[in-house]
Length: 485
Ligand SMILES: Cc1ncc(COP(=O)(O)O)c(C=O)c1O
Image (cartoon, rainbow, N blue to C red; front, side, top):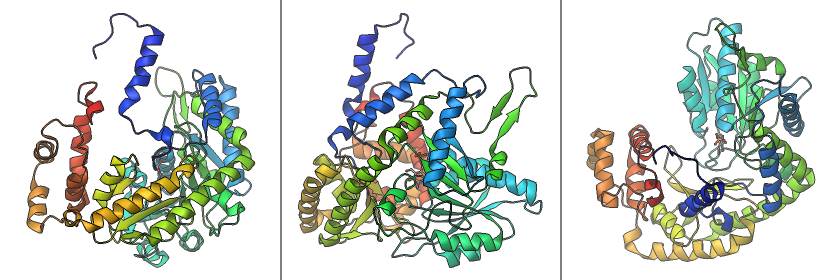
């Protein structure tokens, strides 16, 4: 698209925007089990209106826009209340889980710089199930990630392994409640005790659980300690834009001891312009996401979140029970909530992802890593609940079909093939893959199995190099090309 010479009519361009969604996953039908957090049309409408009402207000300057400041204070206070924070706890509103985690790691690094001058090469100790956002934070802020193994059956962190990884350079430990991949909760209380003993900070990643676990606990689910009242837990990430059902761009980083938050703040008045004082990464920012989150929390309320959690838990429990019974599938770990993952035994799990996609269901493929085999991830939400039986019927039928057909056995590339592929330049490999799997169109094939199989077998560093090249190309394509994918 070239820059328009003349402005266009609103009706026409808004219609075009709607039409552009044609090739997106059809989440409105409740058949997408990732990315979408849908509390129903009424809640979404309230959030949209609240977001739009604050679209133009700028969170950059809380003295000029006290409305944005007050809404943020409210939203953070509600999150702290939900997480049983001790008196004096503080937090900040951020654009997403990733920003919350980036800020938490930066805070830990700057806290160490200020209070532990012997730390010259800061280290973050984290289980191999921790979200990539921590690795991004380490890359951005020059902190060394020290990765520890998890239990091969439960996929939860091993406190003993974490204890061994602590050195005099450790600034923080990480645990997840729950981790995204398998939906299981790390032993937060035990890790908290270790953090206290070692005198280091401890971040609980509650991005996906922060607006869900408190409610299922109230409903009687057996959920171990995870919140800000747990001894040793110093900080947490909690997303409103996941099971809080706020518009995307809404998360929080919370500190049990509010004193820590000062290490997060950046100020710069040493230039010719206006004074910058930013608690978070963005400077100029719409107050829309804050208003959207404020509206979601107030509109849905505890009674609403409990109702949604009950519907979601019932659907999730049904899915876990079914997967445990379907011959050829294996539920990974013992997820207490609404995120789960399952592997295939005796046939190719990536073929099942394609088969389910052909039936209109989106399940998220996850590569093998450490003790975790290649699997499909499922995030269950209330909007999926009415469709669980239909989904399970297709899952049963497709699993039986693929298991019975030898062409769907796992086809692992040989070591030589992998070595040859890994040695190639990412650009050359991508060219070869594109022409092999898509006939050179550059789009995504309907069958992702061959690509997934190849990628799954590669060392993850090689895979990441290819993925970076792929994304770099994807965004360089002319408008409309992405629609072919
Ligand atoms: C446990 C966990 N941490 C962090 C994140 C990153 O959140 P975001 O996508 O909002 O940046 C996610 C996203 O699903 C998550 O599940």
